[in-house]
Length: 121
Image (cartoon, rainbow, N blue to C red; front, side, top):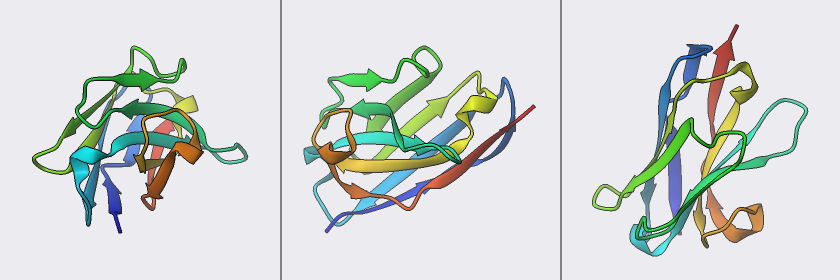
């Protein structure tokens, strides 16, 4: 069983930056693709970014492309989401997930509890 724990969320002003981290345990980290999803109040959960197990491939939602960067450190069993130029529309609970490299929720079998990101102004 794989456990995922997100951290790094918080309150930030529009235009600011945050880096989210997701630490994995209980499995072979490098064998999993990792993804980030988010869910804003009143909206369904949406894909944000994904990275393959070897970090050779990445994918981003159009709404975050050019502003967010996904990366991973397999030696530390951790995936990151660097978020720059944050907008109020980025306010959401952010979830990390482990599974097959893809852009859909069903591609991922393990999920973290989520971390709140709130962008003010």
